[in-house]
Amino acid sequence: MTTAWNGRITSAAKESHRNFKIVWDGQVPDFDLWAIPTGAKHVDEAYKFLAFASAAKTMAALPNYISYGPTNIDAFLSVSPAVLGDLPSAPQNTTNALYQDYYFWGDHGDDLRKRFNTWLAQ
Image (cartoon, rainbow, N blue to C red; front, side, top):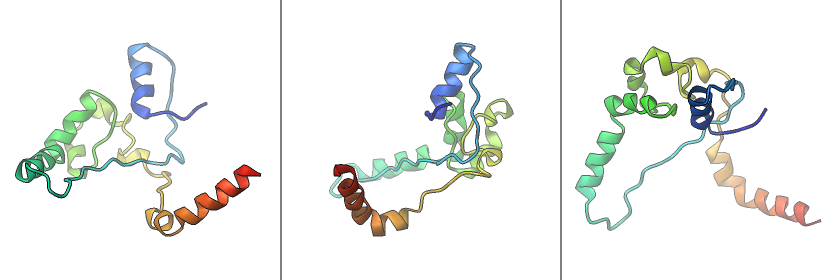
């Protein structure tokens, strides 16, 4: 038993014919973000890219290459049923997910890190 990025486990299971299974119970989803820095020279192009990258059609194609799920829920309508079960954001795989409370960590993270580091140094 281990923790790992689901895309790597799914690829290893399929490409290397390994008997790896992912248990979607209590996983903690992680998120990536796009940002346009202040003062960027090509802001209009950046917005066009963000619109393209977040479009349902674009996101529905991603699981054909790696089993990372779309964040645009409309994309699920076009995802192949053959890969849907391998996606962390598929509705049937998120019923017991544990979501981080970013507001809590924003409010208390610095204090908790200090307390943890003090404990660790003992």
